[in-house]
Image (cartoon, rainbow, N blue to C red; front, side, top):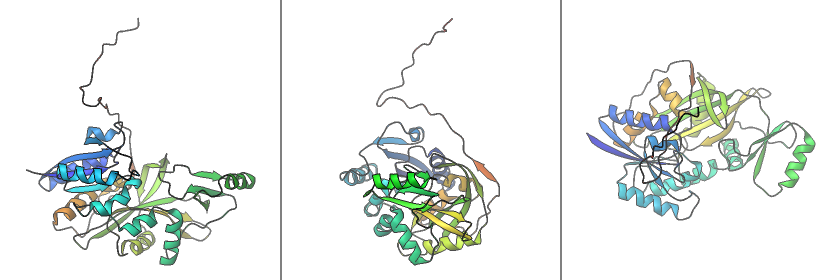
Length: 321
């Protein structure tokens, strides 16, 4: 059985997707050998992939280091799971298969303010900016809900903005939702382009824990405007929030990578990892998939991480009484 060597950048806790990559490789007649480039040894991904401890993705030396790993390990496929790793992908794509958006689009999608301007011109509704409560304040380049604050009192908002003058924040109208994510893939080596909406029913710490696959022609139509752009390739996660005042789905952000909940819609019936590997291998793609309705819940899993370059040491624990 031939081996596919796959390098994940910042996969950290993406155990489900790692296992799905292995399963899909096996379905196609391959063995998947996974590696994950991380800034810490404490990621649970070490139970499914060989962890390579490296530099922060913002370090100017990290690109050369990742490219050395790719050449040394003879990597067939590279995927970014960390937003800070996305700017590396166009250069990585010059030496291995690394399906991703263009450098310009990665830069635009990495900024919430630039994304809003871009989408307004494209005709995709976005959340309205406001300096009046109720509102949400987000770091312009933030991710996973880090640094997001909700303000209900005008004086508190005014004080926050005054104290943070000059820093990059975007201030948006507060919307109660519901919130939707579309897991997407636009193939590099074929014409296949797919998008599947799911409602983010329960979100904890920026990570969805319960989703519900939904049918929405409007969401798919809005997303198709983005997926048809020149320079859009590979996996994407596109998020919308329902704006009841305007009766529209307003775009929140575009992530030029697999979203944390992509494994949920794969379980529902869209085999993202198999589609990805078929794209790599230039295998024929299916044009239609059967998707199951229903809620999809994620559960926690405990993983023992052994010390570096050592076998785990077992110590006796005696009864207290």
